[in-house]
Amino acid sequence: MRLKKPNKFILKFSKKINFGNLKNLFFIVSLLYFLIYFFNNFGQLSFAINFEKGGKNILLSFLFCLLSIYLNAFAWKNIVIWFGKINIKNNLVSFYVLTNILKYVPGGIWHFVERFNFIKDLSNPQLAFYSTLIEPYFMLSASLLLASIGIIFSPFYVFLILPLIFLNKKLIYIVLKILENLKGKATQVLNLKNSEYKLKQRINLSSFFPIKSFLFEITFVLSKFFGFFICFNTFNSNQNVDILFLFVIFCLSWSIGLIVPTAPGGVGIFESCFLFFITRNIPQSEVFVSLVYFRLISTSADLFLGFPFLFKKIFK
Image (cartoon, rainbow, N blue to C red; front, side, top):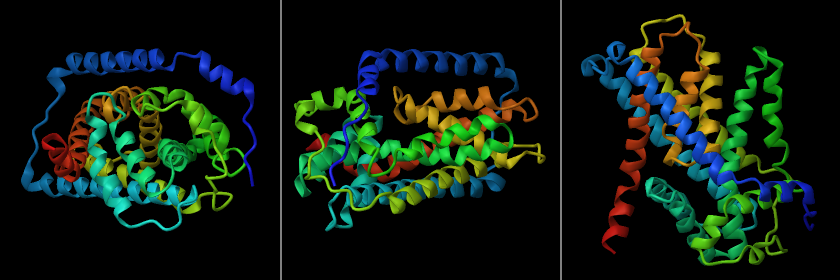
């Protein structure tokens, strides 16, 4: 079944907006907010940790971050399968895990390029390009769906399920074309014209909705949150914290960091949004310290798994 052409107005609108400048502006504002908060509360912040009591929690948080990377890798593998590549080897998961470190390399697209080249050798350029391009949208849809639990706080949260509606065989083409316009830099690096990457019959979506890959993305976000929550509990002195509220704020902040990938992994953006959304009922100095430690832990997990690959690429 051939996919319908997307709404022309949506595509024209996405082309006219300079998303690059908007992302850079948002990143600068977020970083300034984070730094201003740091210097204004410098005297109240304490990064000291008792490793005899908190060391196990730090290790457990690290393990959950490692688990999240593998869950994300399995999600990508199933996205590739959904796009039409059925006979796939398990090394697709390990390749994703190893190349995850490349998102910290200046440019922010080299993990995308490596995965594109890998899938292209297994299948065809169309499947490689779009299956790699769509994976962050799966993460975003899963995170926002989980954040929509916040509907118990406000009816506004119901709108967070909208990205999920487009994850189906009939509407996915609209998302792909918009993402293609946003990822023009990637096509330039690959020395390929956008016109070469139109959805053709070489891409054959295997089902109406990608259930497996989406469920893996859900567990990926949950694993990330568990890693953060363990870290948060290590430094939090207030036991009367609404875990559900904390979870909604985490999903929202992480989603915004994903949408604005000017900094690798949403560095600065996730933390600033979390501090902005959190209420005064929770000591913000403790939240700040938890965010810094969680960033160090999650980044260490990426480096731990991907350093052998990066080391090999540098000396190749």
